[in-house]
Image (cartoon, rainbow, N blue to C red; front, side, top):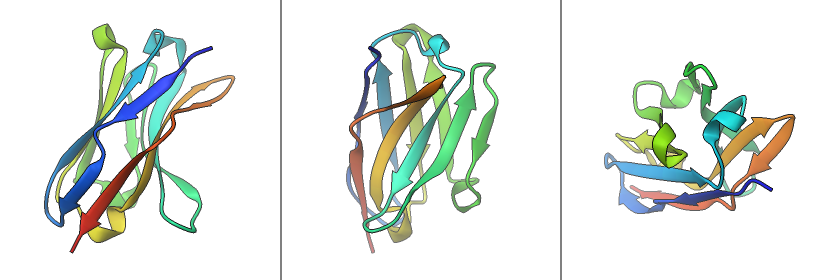
Length: 114
């Protein structure tokens, strides 16, 4: 059973930066795609950024130009580099791996204060 473990969340002021990490227990190449989702309190979980097996990336309109997803194949880890953070970026960030079904991490809280 593949495990995804997120880290790097925390409290940051608006305009600040934060980098999230998601370490997989196996090869990240076992996934067709991986991504980061955000869930604000009382709202649905929405896709923020994704990266395919081939390395193609995609972003939600609300984070384009501010967030960047990357991966370190040797470390079986993907990252979400977040900059120019806004209070509306607050939420629990979940790492996702897609391989047939969906695999999820436990989530990491990001809080952006105004």
